Image (cartoon, rainbow, N blue to C red):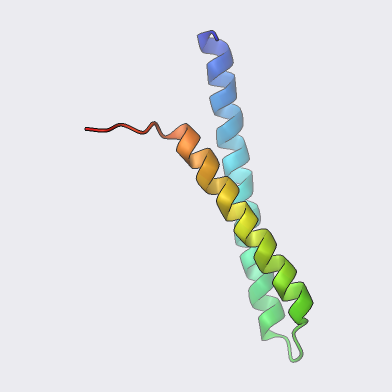
Length: 72
């Protein structure tokens, strides 16, 4: 793999990471709004929380790819 394609891959991962972080924050706000409702829909909350966890896993995975694991 040459340097330019690696840079493109790194840039693409960084962009994806930022999008996931933004979506994660948005989902967090949506969850808070639903919980503040007089009669929150528990099924909707459960689905949003599950989706939020999946996003967090993706954020962790991409972050690990972007930050090299250096053992000192």
